[in-house]
Length: 188
Picture 1 (cartoon, rainbow, N blue to C red):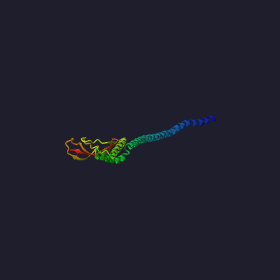
Picture 2: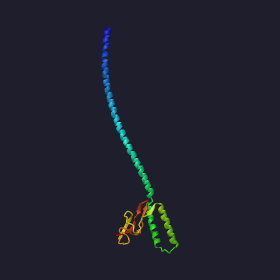
Picture 3: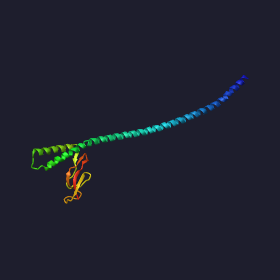
Picture 4: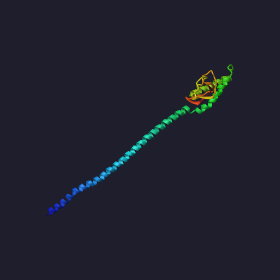
Protein backbone atom coordinates (compact mmCIF):
# COMPACT_ATOMS: atom_id res chain seq x y z
CA UNK A 1 0.00 0.00 0.00
CA UNK A 2 2.71 2.28 0.96
CA UNK A 3 4.51 1.19 -2.03
CA UNK A 4 1.54 1.89 -4.17
CA UNK A 5 1.05 5.25 -2.62
CA UNK A 6 4.61 5.92 -2.85
CA UNK A 7 4.58 4.59 -6.34
CA UNK A 8 1.62 6.67 -7.21
CA UNK A 9 3.16 9.65 -5.51
CA UNK A 10 6.32 8.89 -7.10
CA UNK A 11 4.60 8.37 -10.40
CA UNK A 12 2.81 11.64 -10.34
CA UNK A 13 5.81 13.84 -10.07
CA UNK A 14 7.58 11.78 -12.69
CA UNK A 15 4.72 12.24 -15.05
CA UNK A 16 4.66 16.00 -14.37
CA UNK A 17 8.41 16.51 -14.61
CA UNK A 18 8.73 15.84 -18.33
CA UNK A 19 5.82 18.17 -18.92
CA UNK A 20 7.53 20.78 -16.80
CA UNK A 21 10.82 20.10 -18.55
CA UNK A 22 9.06 20.34 -21.88
CA UNK A 23 7.45 23.58 -20.79
CA UNK A 24 10.72 24.87 -19.37
CA UNK A 25 12.70 24.63 -22.64
CA UNK A 26 9.81 26.26 -24.46
CA UNK A 27 9.70 29.04 -21.92
CA UNK A 28 13.51 29.23 -21.88
CA UNK A 29 13.66 29.03 -25.68
CA UNK A 30 11.43 32.05 -26.03
CA UNK A 31 13.67 34.34 -23.97
CA UNK A 32 16.75 32.90 -25.67
CA UNK A 33 15.22 33.60 -29.07
CA UNK A 34 14.33 37.10 -27.92
CA UNK A 35 17.88 37.53 -26.64
CA UNK A 36 19.31 36.35 -29.97
CA UNK A 37 17.04 38.72 -31.84
CA UNK A 38 18.04 41.52 -29.49
CA UNK A 39 21.73 40.72 -29.99
CA UNK A 40 21.31 40.56 -33.75
CA UNK A 41 19.65 43.95 -33.71
CA UNK A 42 22.40 45.35 -31.51
CA UNK A 43 24.99 43.84 -33.86
CA UNK A 44 23.26 45.40 -36.85
CA UNK A 45 23.28 48.79 -35.11
CA UNK A 46 26.97 48.42 -34.26
CA UNK A 47 27.78 47.32 -37.81
CA UNK A 48 25.95 50.39 -39.09
CA UNK A 49 27.91 52.59 -36.67
CA UNK A 50 31.16 50.92 -37.71
CA UNK A 51 30.36 51.52 -41.40
CA UNK A 52 29.52 55.17 -40.68
CA UNK A 53 32.73 55.58 -38.69
CA UNK A 54 34.75 53.95 -41.46
CA UNK A 55 33.16 56.26 -44.02
CA UNK A 56 33.89 59.24 -41.78
CA UNK A 57 37.49 58.06 -41.35
CA UNK A 58 37.98 57.71 -45.11
CA UNK A 59 36.51 61.17 -45.72
CA UNK A 60 38.64 62.75 -42.99
CA UNK A 61 41.73 61.07 -44.38
CA UNK A 62 40.92 62.34 -47.88
CA UNK A 63 40.36 65.84 -46.48
CA UNK A 64 43.68 65.65 -44.67
CA UNK A 65 45.46 64.52 -47.82
CA UNK A 66 43.84 67.35 -49.81
CA UNK A 67 44.84 69.83 -47.11
CA UNK A 68 48.43 68.55 -47.20
CA UNK A 69 48.57 68.88 -51.02
CA UNK A 70 46.99 72.35 -50.93
CA UNK A 71 49.44 73.50 -48.26
CA UNK A 72 52.37 72.14 -50.26
CA UNK A 73 51.12 73.89 -53.41
CA UNK A 74 50.64 77.17 -51.53
CA UNK A 75 54.12 76.86 -50.08
CA UNK A 76 55.59 76.33 -53.55
CA UNK A 77 53.61 79.29 -54.92
CA UNK A 78 54.80 81.44 -52.04
CA UNK A 79 58.41 80.53 -52.78
CA UNK A 80 57.97 81.20 -56.50
CA UNK A 81 55.89 84.36 -56.37
CA UNK A 82 56.32 85.67 -52.83
CA UNK A 83 58.57 88.53 -53.89
CA UNK A 84 56.38 89.63 -56.81
CA UNK A 85 55.37 92.92 -55.19
CA UNK A 86 59.01 93.84 -54.52
CA UNK A 87 59.97 93.05 -58.11
CA UNK A 88 57.05 95.08 -59.48
CA UNK A 89 58.28 98.02 -57.40
CA UNK A 90 61.82 97.62 -58.82
CA UNK A 91 60.76 97.48 -62.49
CA UNK A 92 60.29 101.28 -62.83
CA UNK A 93 63.88 101.68 -61.59
CA UNK A 94 65.04 99.36 -64.38
CA UNK A 95 62.90 101.30 -66.89
CA UNK A 96 64.39 104.64 -65.81
CA UNK A 97 67.94 103.34 -65.96
CA UNK A 98 67.33 101.96 -69.46
CA UNK A 99 65.83 105.30 -70.57
CA UNK A 100 68.81 107.16 -69.13
CA UNK A 101 71.19 104.95 -71.09
CA UNK A 102 69.10 105.26 -74.27
CA UNK A 103 69.30 109.06 -74.06
CA UNK A 104 73.00 109.14 -73.28
CA UNK A 105 75.04 109.75 -76.38
CA UNK A 106 77.13 106.87 -77.66
CA UNK A 107 80.38 108.75 -77.53
CA UNK A 108 79.73 109.95 -73.98
CA UNK A 109 81.72 107.45 -71.92
CA UNK A 110 81.59 109.34 -68.70
CA UNK A 111 82.01 107.51 -65.42
CA UNK A 112 78.39 108.27 -64.51
CA UNK A 113 77.06 106.58 -67.65
CA UNK A 114 79.36 103.62 -67.08
CA UNK A 115 78.19 103.42 -63.46
CA UNK A 116 74.54 103.46 -64.52
CA UNK A 117 75.26 100.76 -67.11
CA UNK A 118 76.98 98.55 -64.51
CA UNK A 119 74.23 99.10 -61.95
CA UNK A 120 71.58 98.23 -64.53
CA UNK A 121 73.47 95.06 -65.45
CA UNK A 122 73.72 94.02 -61.80
CA UNK A 123 70.03 94.72 -61.23
CA UNK A 124 69.00 92.76 -64.33
CA UNK A 125 71.17 89.83 -63.32
CA UNK A 126 69.68 89.85 -59.78
CA UNK A 127 66.17 89.88 -61.26
CA UNK A 128 67.10 86.99 -63.56
CA UNK A 129 68.25 84.94 -60.54
CA UNK A 130 64.74 85.30 -59.09
CA UNK A 131 63.10 84.14 -62.33
CA UNK A 132 62.30 87.51 -63.91
CA UNK A 133 62.45 87.60 -67.70
CA UNK A 134 61.44 90.25 -70.22
CA UNK A 135 58.43 89.70 -72.49
CA UNK A 136 59.32 89.23 -76.15
CA UNK A 137 58.19 92.40 -77.85
CA UNK A 138 60.42 93.13 -80.84
CA UNK A 139 59.18 95.24 -83.71
CA UNK A 140 57.23 92.96 -86.05
CA UNK A 141 56.39 90.39 -83.38
CA UNK A 142 52.78 89.22 -83.66
CA UNK A 143 50.59 90.95 -81.09
CA UNK A 144 49.76 88.60 -78.20
CA UNK A 145 47.06 89.94 -75.86
CA UNK A 146 48.28 87.51 -73.18
CA UNK A 147 51.55 89.42 -72.75
CA UNK A 148 51.08 92.68 -74.69
CA UNK A 149 48.91 95.67 -73.87
CA UNK A 150 47.96 97.66 -76.96
CA UNK A 151 48.19 101.40 -76.32
CA UNK A 152 47.25 102.46 -79.86
CA UNK A 153 46.82 101.17 -83.38
CA UNK A 154 48.86 102.72 -86.18
CA UNK A 155 49.23 102.40 -89.95
CA UNK A 156 52.59 100.88 -90.77
CA UNK A 157 53.55 99.26 -94.05
CA UNK A 158 56.86 97.86 -92.70
CA UNK A 159 55.27 95.22 -90.49
CA UNK A 160 52.36 92.84 -91.12
CA UNK A 161 48.96 93.65 -89.66
CA UNK A 162 48.32 92.99 -85.97
CA UNK A 163 52.05 93.14 -85.17
CA UNK A 164 54.03 95.16 -82.65
CA UNK A 165 55.24 98.46 -84.13
CA UNK A 166 56.75 100.21 -81.13
CA UNK A 167 57.44 99.26 -77.52
CA UNK A 168 56.60 101.97 -75.00
CA UNK A 169 57.40 99.94 -71.90
CA UNK A 170 58.92 96.47 -71.47
CA UNK A 171 56.84 93.69 -69.99
CA UNK A 172 58.11 91.12 -67.52
CA UNK A 173 57.37 87.55 -66.45
CA UNK A 174 58.09 86.10 -63.02
CA UNK A 175 58.59 82.33 -63.27
CA UNK A 176 56.49 82.26 -66.46
CA UNK A 177 53.70 84.31 -64.84
CA UNK A 178 53.02 87.75 -66.32
CA UNK A 179 53.63 90.47 -63.75
CA UNK A 180 53.57 93.41 -66.18
CA UNK A 181 52.43 93.39 -69.84
CA UNK A 182 54.51 95.10 -72.50
CA UNK A 183 52.90 98.36 -73.59
CA UNK A 184 53.03 98.48 -77.38
CA UNK A 185 51.52 100.06 -80.46
CA UNK A 186 49.99 97.65 -82.95
CA UNK A 187 49.81 97.85 -86.74
CA UNK A 188 46.40 97.92 -88.46
